[in-house]
Amino acid sequence: MQTLNLFQKVSLTLITLNLSLTGGKAVAGSFSGSTFDPGQIDSGIAGFVGSDGLGVVSPNNNVNPIFTGWATGFTNYRPAPGVLEQWQTPEKTLGEVTGAFDDIASLGELTTEQIAAGVSPGEITLTFANSIRNGTGADFAVFENGFGFASDGSLFGELAYVEVSEDMKMKREVGDRYVCEKCGAQLVYEKPCPCPESMPHSEICCGEQMKLVAKPVSVQTGNK
Image (cartoon, rainbow, N blue to C red; front, side, top):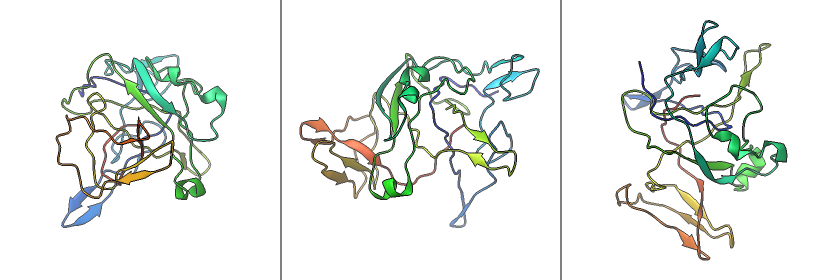
């Protein structure tokens, strides 16, 4: 059985493309559905278990005991433009998942025009009382209130980056773009930073840390 050392729940769907490189070609498999769907290339871990089946939220099921810890704090909650006040509830990202559709905090979404204009997406940084350790199998999971449409089998989901850092110490990669929220100046990494990931980095403009607004497309592994 896999062991999840820590768990965080946020109002977003992590839908990732897990690529296998064979002979220089990127090969992708079928994606999982909106509910627990094992055996797919991006299958998550059942959040609820019990007599009603894996992944089913019901009175007869309980939170999967494989989750042994939960987010205990948050910072940098910055929803995208247009998020209604009733969904700006970052405190709901803390503690054990409930399965309730409205027990969430929204990060919002961007239109094609907003993305082209460089509007910053929503973000939140969750903190944990205990460290997330790199063990066998999955180490953490993200929950969302995504849903599917029975009429055509389509899935309502949002793309997102999910990163884990040691006290906000993250490596800088080619294509990372930072913007100053005061004057609008931008900084883009054309070469990866050779410093170790454990070393703190700063991009300062107008006396403040610049905001990360874009990262290059990369292979990620995650759970819904």
